[in-house]
Length: 520
Image (cartoon, rainbow, N blue to C red):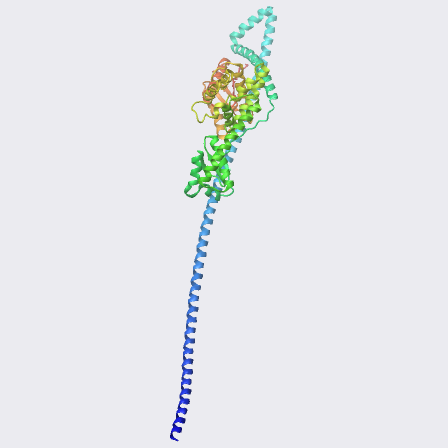
């Protein structure tokens, strides 16, 4: 019985202990879960705080970067605006300078026109007085014949003696009239020959200018041409021998150099590089070499075209190449190859009119300026260089004489040489064949007037007809008619010695004599 109670009591205690343990484990589990929840919430809260801080830092950095980019953009925009303002100011100053020059030139032209009208009026007055004087002399001669009843020859002798004593100037005028008559005959014949030659030579001619400027699609291309630390531009300059000017003109590169062949090679090379877009030293070297070969072929083709156009037959290949080089040579804006072709045709037609060899005259005209093809490479004038080249290739003596004498420094020995010199002057003096800058034009006019006024006895001098004529007014009380002719020759000599000009310059000396008396 006692054992059963103990067993029951044990069972009861076991049940109570089990329930107590179960309750305790539930309590401990709930407490751990509560702490875990608190820890999780704490971790989540910390994560939110960290995320907020990171978000604020990112936003702050983004704002700073946007602010810096805005400052950089404003700075670049301001620099670009300053650059454009500077360019606008330069263009404005250039435009104002051109306007001032144009106004001065218009004013000078107006003054020249006024002076020319005054001179024409004075000339007409002189002619009227001469006519009245001729009438008086005729009337006096008739009366003298009636009174003296001399024969016509006796009266003429007395009249000439009287004229010689009292009017020596009339004798000079008589001599001048005879000279003018002879000159008129020569001028008429020469004009007839020249007009016939020009009419037969109906070839179109042009005035060409060498422009060494390469256009760029944008200013960014300038940086690519310059290259890193300037290596590309240095490579181009070293390979071509031409200076590249980058900053003067927007969206353009200016090529500067005395050698026209090198300048053409550089121009074509830069154009090819800009079109291709690949610009680095290796590519530059390849393009320049290829362009040099192309230009050599182009030069030979131009020379062969000129020889074929003129029709002078066989000529040495080296001379053909030198003729092609003249395509890139200009003189006062006139293309030398076209000028040589003109001279060849004109000289040929003149020779045909005079019964000389047309073929030989064409050859001499085409080769007369051959020295200009290399005058920037060899010392000496283009006449000396051309003469040596022609001798080397055994050209005929007429060709050598034409080259040596076409500028009048040496007396011509053959008729063909004279015709070539005339054709050379005719081609150069043709209106529009050559161009001059405004400064050189004004300088030439001033130099003409200065040379004329430096002569003793000259009162005034005016350069007219675009510098192709100078009219000189002398002091009539100090200069007679004979001295006036001497002054004209002196001025002509000074102009030829001191000035360089295309074509010819006419010198006109004007002497006005006024006789005055008072009737009482």
